[in-house]
Length: 343
Length: 289
Image (cartoon, rainbow over all chains, first blue to last red; front, side, top):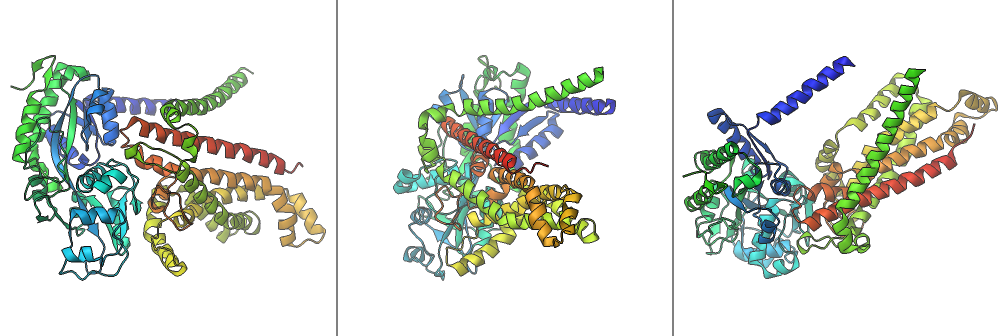
């Protein structure tokens, strides 16, 4: 009995101290988690400031920053104007890196496929049912397409990847916008749902004739063949770290709440998007102390500058030059009761 | 005397605590699903349309998916689990082979459900796809049938281990009396053991039904996660627990979140009702003696 009590006390103290030792607390998106945990590890060894990040999902991150239980939230989708109104004080978005959604498929011989926006939306609407459809053949004259049923794979869990993909389809197809719309969870017209990137990749690998969307980093790491997609300028772009960074090489709004899908950038991959960190503009509103506020701003500056070099080895696209310039202005606007924290 | 009282008090407190826990869980589910209940009312239960971007939520498709997978799994599992119970409880109680089987069925209950899910995805799905090609339905491989098969394997240890215990509890003098009247072993099983143990066996089946209703990870990996009413047992579908697990973490819209919690409330009520009626049946089956 006594022994158990002692063990419990030790555990309790251990848990408490691990919370107390973390200088900054964040929660949210799972998509950038590998990058963030690498960044925070390096930051701790370089500056001795510990950042505790809980990858509980964008929805949870937004709820927690709204409730002010964390110092910063992280989300794969920017807040809508209505969602911003639910906060007690103004919040700002800081993009940290970009990711992309790729289309992977399972066809005999793994040919290199090209797809147009119309083909993608009609496949996912269930209107193109066979791989040897003349419309697919027209775009891929060199590929011998089999007479096979197309089986669509999609994410079953709510996810930023689905949001970016459906945001793209809503922009390029009026029918998609009206019938399905965009969101993290959808009512899919056709197809099978898999949980997470591994779930969708599993459906694609196992089902001959399958096509599905998966995150770029996952596709690169698992060497899954992906389609080149025609962008707004008419160029067929293969998804890669470079073409995703290039997608942000365009006019961007000052608050950086922007979707990169269907980008104007000539060499940009059309299904890309930022991931953001969300903080209160006046950090006092987020219940931070002055010291913590200064630390947080320093961290954000470091993440969007020095730490950008950590992105590429982990298959995330670093911020483009234009994106970084806008982001600098946003970080400089962060204040503590009106006093700017960075000069 | 005094320590007796303290012990009794502790037991009461623990019991009361459990009851309160369940009650407050129910209360907070009701409270958090209020905005969904207000928005959709009874329609929530009979509407098969679940469309987050349009903010339309109905539970029927998932309700049907949950019941179909659970009942199908139960039906497939019953003959196997009763056979295992009899084998372990009566025929091979103490020999080496019986002990190995005993140990392995218990081990089945301890495997994490995500392992079942992965195993289902990589082993069962290709087999089911072949069956589907033979039957002539679309060869998805995933769907209600695959989910039911996985659930069957997951619930067999629950039913069979409880069945085994109650069969071992059948009084020896009853069995010996039957043997002395010239009954064969099969007749003893049929006329003495099964009637005596049926209430316990039923309790085991009920427990595993509850487990099948609430199973999440393994099901979500092999059911195909399609938010439509299933057209046949091979069709992809979705269950209530699976939808909650899939969509909860990223549900930013308040009504979406509230509807997911109402799904949980619905699942809670179904489990409660099944347990309640199960208890009535168990009491009716019970052999006095």
